[in-house]
Length: 86
Image 1 (spheres, rainbow, N blue to C red):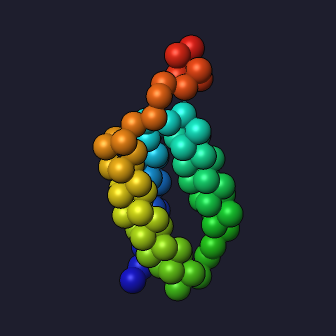
Image 2: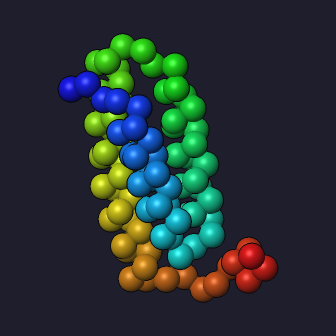
């Protein structure tokens, strides 16, 4: 599977969108940091096999993030001090 740059950027945006759905500030911030770190670690990949493998892993992470965000919305935490001042 040959994965193009626009497809990878679409995955990045989808992950960021899902990460913003967490009701808890700490989870939102962790998701944002982890997404950025993951993509920075893989920016230098050049072999199509490696890119494809990481893309598949990213899709799995997106599915997991969607499930976690849904659970987060069902069982919201109390409002964080960080959310009150934002």
